[in-house]
Length: 524
Ligand code: KIV
Ligand code: ZN
Image 1 (cartoon, rainbow, N blue to C red):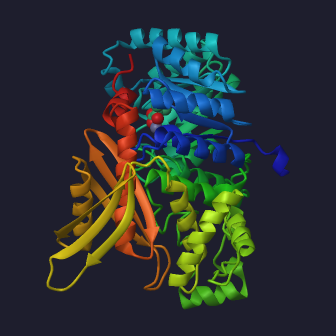
Image 2 (image 1 turned 45 degrees about the vertical axis):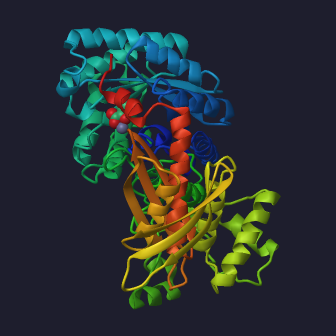
Image 3 (image 1 turned 90 degrees about the vertical axis):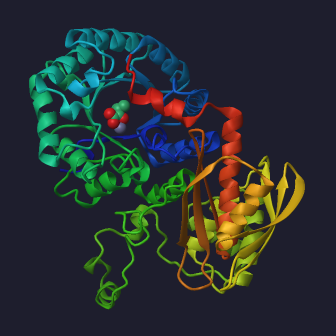
């Protein structure tokens, strides 16, 4: 069979909906638009851009993504009620190709929440899918917690949704409970038993609570599902969703046993993975399949020897296939603007002239402090540059810390607050503690530090540190990141970054808690 004859699997990305629902992964409006543009460019078929009724912010993001998308279908999520569906349609209707996605929990546990009998729920499904279909030709319906729903009732509800006009039926493993054989059997059962099943596309939507989301999704495809719902880096609530990069690369690399094609340009994977990690504040684990820092690293002597003789000895796919540049020759302080531009292009960053100028200035400063500037350093630097926002309330001007074995450590900090410089000195249990206390004294706030994480970008004592900070205040969560060769400077900048985002969120929206609570609890 030639590639063109292979069944096409539709890739439905829900990074901006299910991924963003993960506590702490909240993204700004601009970040959502940037990610949507990257998804569109890489060939994702359907982008689930958000849950329009959840907040004004979600509505605005879905509407704008719908207007901007070039090729992808833009989908919005809605609970099974007319108000949600109307709001969803108002947001997605601007797209060249819009989709409405109503859902309701069909398992016994989920049926108990809106307190509907089986018959009442069946009627609700009929009415809401019909309503959605009257608005939009493209309707996807999901029986939430399908993998724990009685088979007879699942078949009944799926049949009703198909008769009411649903064009895609999504089968969610909402709590990550199923296993590959069962996932395949469920799709096969539905295809066999439900009248009209051959007229619609079946989708698989898996969560990774038992680490089987990728295997479950692929097993569903082997049984006849033709749409995979997934997220970049497997982002998502709890243990996350099926990772887009894993299913796409699995079908590409093992096309001999999984002969399916997708429309994804896999060379875009690394770039979007880095972007999602940076904006969500969820760093990719080092040994994560496909996009982890170590996924293509061969450190042991035996591996290196084999790799030098023949890369296929230990590599089943080429780094370039996922968008990793093959040569990672470092730049140094004598490298010019053209070398920087070309290196950044290789890394997937096509910067405008003014952005390149700013990055060049920072690159030179970094190269003065660090002999060799590696790809990872440049990525950290560009991402740091992208995070600077002119309208930020707080900006770090100067920081000096005094450390010693006989503490307490001291920090002298100057912050610009709404453009006015203010300075203070603080002591603490370690330099980071002292510096964070100084921030809090200059800008008093009630946010609680939920996460403080430091990663060395490269090896060596002159390596840059990337710091991620997550803070929470009254249910609002904000993350911040920064990179610097000085770990304390990176820490303070990341903290201030998170505070700036919290301030923006305070100004703009309702607490996250409100947004999350409308998700699954009340399907009425
Ligand atoms: O996991 C789930 O059940 C979902 C549905 C809303 C599709 O995300
Ligand atoms: Zn989900």
